[in-house]
Length: 168
Ligand SMILES: [Cu+2]
Image (cartoon, rainbow, N blue to C red):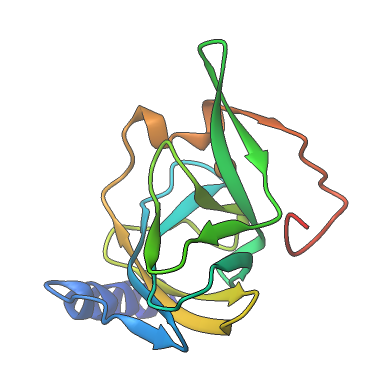
């Protein structure tokens, strides 16, 4: 079992080495650079660049993955010098514009990971947009995070753990 999982990790690592996740396009939405830093605790965050080629705004309204028990959309806010995270109903992708989910900024919070995210791993993520619908993407696991990505040390405000699935 141990050997088998080691071989599996090796295969995944070899596959991920030098791999570049392809842009995924659905309707007017193009999702690229989907990644997550290697995890240090039970939770992690996933990031992506989302482009909207359409003439109307769209909203990322939900995220789901088998890699964690729950996925929430979070924004990071500076509350008098203390960085806190807050659940949001949606992330706007402006018309002919883009939104970047990045460390210290808007992110997809992965709560209670199924297993630790190791550098070189990848996992599926389904992003649901108000207009473009559900888009399945692959996230690549990169280097462990800088302190700004350490969600374990950050407060979560307005977190309702009784609400599974999304921040809605
Ligand atoms: Cu968060």
